[in-house]
Length: 295
Image 1 (tube, rainbow, N blue to C red):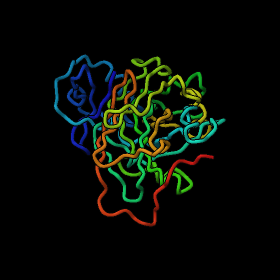
Image 2: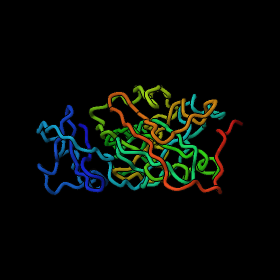
Image 3: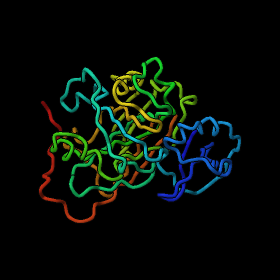
Image 4: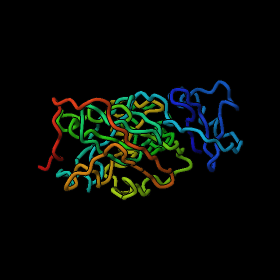
């Protein structure tokens, strides 16, 4: 099953995507909540599974498929080649950081360049959406807590990310987490540890990897996070990016106004976002970062 949210920004409706057609779930369930914590907690996922309506063609915007989760947790350096391209060793345990909720963005909505960072980069990632609450979840039970999977672009303001000494601000600018194009439920996507993952910038392939190369696999990640952090329904875990990001290239390649970045995960689909320029002049207090740490 492929869950979507569709309609104007701020007024999205829950739906299903079936072979390019859209099923409006509110026509079948007028009281169905938006796709977020109450949706998963109250077992609307099972009710949506029962809908046999094949949908209709709609020329309509797709929104971020998850509404306002309690948290977005990302995993750093979770592909060995990506760690190496930045001059790092592979981590011995998962590196966790978070993105703020204001980063969530539709799968085809524009990415807004910030005023306080000038070196904006892309990171294609497989995102996991939790379907059940859990704490101290065993790796063997992890997938029973998962609702499904999406494509995410962990857009990053590198000069803020590295200049601040911590990741939060550089990862949390408005629109910096395009997500979608749908939420593919786990029953439809069983082999999540063997999926091709790619990013194309203006039609040129920049990243190509496979989820089988994740250093820390999804069940272990869920076990590790939930040891002392309760995971709630709708929470998003973004599992890391393969090599090929822009900042570590020589010379660096960065997102510019008019750039189009397409991120794709096999069997889920793709998101594609045009970059739009910031308003106003850059604040001179935040000097440009000149490249990734190579130590």
